Image 1 (cartoon, rainbow, N blue to C red):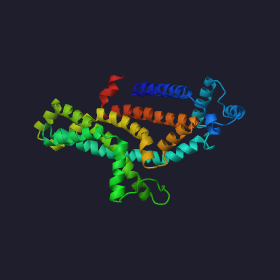
Image 2: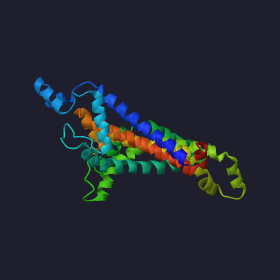
Image 3: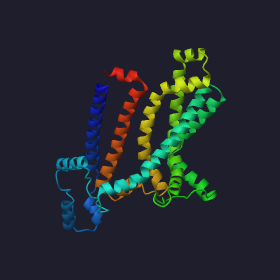
Image 4: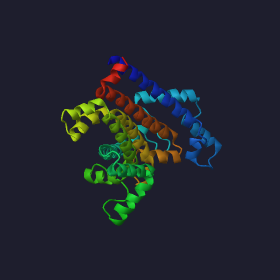
Amino acid sequence: MSLFLFKRFLTFIATLVGASALIFVVLEILPGNAAQMLMGPDAAPEAVAALTSKLGLDQPALSRYAQWVGGLLQGDLGNSYVYSTPVLELVLERLALTVPLALLAMLITTALALAAGLYAASHHNRVGDVGMMSLAQVGIAIPNFWFAILLILLFSVHLKWFSAGGFPGWEDDPLDALKSLLLPAVSLAVVQAAILARITRSAVLEVMREDFVRTARAKGLSRRATLWGHVLRNALIPVITVMGLQFANLLAGTIVVENVFFLPGLGRLIFQSIANRDLIVVRNCVMLLASLVVVVNFVVDLLYAVIDPRVKASDI
């Protein structure tokens, strides 16, 4: 077990280092100058040069990379060029919206996908299976921003059950705040639920063909008891893998959906920072999203060993 964890931890660290280097290099080769963007196109070259020096943009790239990584390790993400406030404060403020939104979307995704996948697998090659997978195929084809607009038109404009956008905050009324996140969460969850439902169906069907399932049925267990007690756990490994990746996709997908619903989350912050060429904010936000992807995959690897001891044994 210790060797298994050690190998996964080394992979975890190496991936973070590689991600940080890639993010820094990609943002370094982007055209434009942050100082020029802040001062405007008509600013004097001397003023732009002075601001460039003040922001440290005239230092060698390797030196700036080392300073950035050192700041990350110490929890110092620097100050935003545009907002003139610490990046860490901006990120934490926006995460208070984005993380609950992604968790709510993941909860909806899991509930819909497991129910649809299990139902389709238990009605294999029947009307329920064909109908459910047809709906899943339609769900995969729907862009989440377009579906978000449809939800606004139906539930906000016509039925007036939800607000069309904005976020009231968690302080005054948490239930009202949660309600404002419901439509964005559903728009994020539809595509992911459709994908996960198809994977759940395939995984369950594969396990249902195993000998131990026939043995359980021969011992007198009902179809439902066999499905929930024996099949589902053994089918969870590919499902959990995709769920881990989907949670990271949901966090990244908030960039578009938060702009549709005018939500002041991390996705909207990234969008605004790209427009303002506030590279220090963009760099740290993208690194945060990349880190979340790596952390989620690390947790999924650990869950493998809990769900299926054969995974753990194969690495020892």
